[in-house]
Image (cartoon, rainbow, N blue to C red; front, top):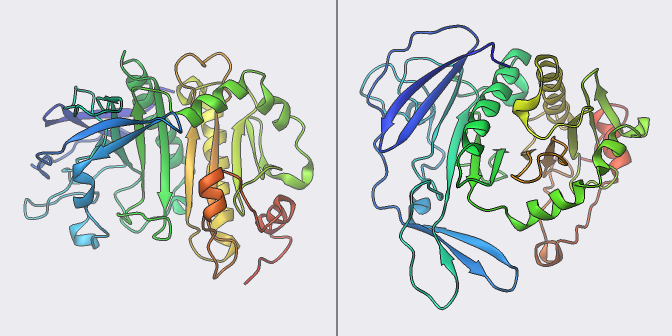
Length: 351
């Protein structure tokens, strides 16, 4: 998975910009946006849920739905426009979020009557394209393959750090989800601890249920497959039109995929996003999670991707209601079997 090029630019204050390309490129660089000053962040322990909660003072001031001329992910051509990616052109870029809730260095911890600790980790942004209007489903297979290689490179670098336990690449797509930037991008969070939900899922994977599932998926749930993997609607889907993508070979990290698997799985991810956008003939809002192995679970974890769309009809959104938020007990309007038929174009969705 090394047939790509990386340019690293020091952005000051310990932050770096990584530029990934299929061919060797020369970049014209600019000064770019300045770091955010005075951000205070720390963790507090929730004694009832047994979870950590992060508090970050800078999040209220995040850039909110700027136009293309003011977009911090678009490239720069003069010093008159500032950007978090201060180069004249790029293919895929990863950089540290200026409004990061997690930091590698120790953060100031308040003394309270409950446990507190430093908010250890990182918050990266990964921009999929320099084109402000391009959707994930409109990217080329080669570009998505490069995105996989970029995530593989960055996640391996983060997991090599002694104070990082888990890495989560993900994407929020669509205003309905709550994105603050329309430019096509995802994020990569790393954590100094393993979140409880992830720990529970990793424990459940020790018995290898996913490998058994993907080798016995009923045809009515399969959307696409190739030599390396499959995309399907899970029988237990919690969201309308939920799609999982998984390699047939049990591997725990993106950087463990070989070149053929990287190519074939990028094609399945592209086909999945295209199917979602075709359901209502408009971009589908969703979250996409890359389920990588936390430290300590590398030998038992099975890598997969999960698209969680929030539209149950053309005019209705799937909101998490009280019972779902409070209990985690999901109420689903659309049976997975019908979702699969709609995604394959065999049946029309509800208006």
